[in-house]
Image 1 (cartoon, helix red, strand yellow):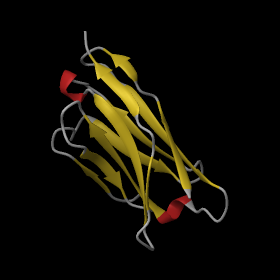
Image 2: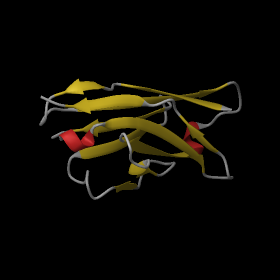
Image 3: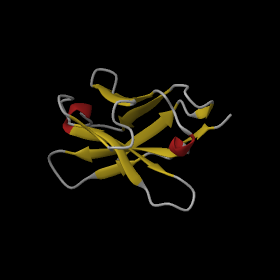
Image 4: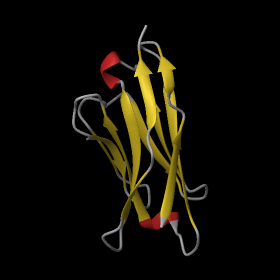
Amino acid sequence: QVQLVESGGGLVQPGGSLRLSCAASAASGFTFRNYAMSWYRQAPGKERELVASITAAGGGTNYADSVKGRFTISKDNAKNTVYLQMNSLKPEDTAVYYCNANYRLGPLSYWGQGTQVTVSS
């Protein structure tokens, strides 16, 4: 079982920035570099949507069109942590942001508990 703990959410004004972190851990036999990581978000009354993803080795990234050029996902395999740098935030970015880990060698997927991001003046 892999535990994912998100942090870094909060209230920010439009145009501001936040950096989310997701720290991964497990009881034993855990190798973070074997997991592709993603950030999802869910706004009230809407379905959960993919925001950004990064390959297990960290060499490839993918972004939703709505965040391209504003958000950057990165992965530190030495620290077992994935980040989401969010710049030029807009009110429509307001949502609960979730971290997801997908094991590249099998059908295992884990979710964090989520962190609230609110963009408002």
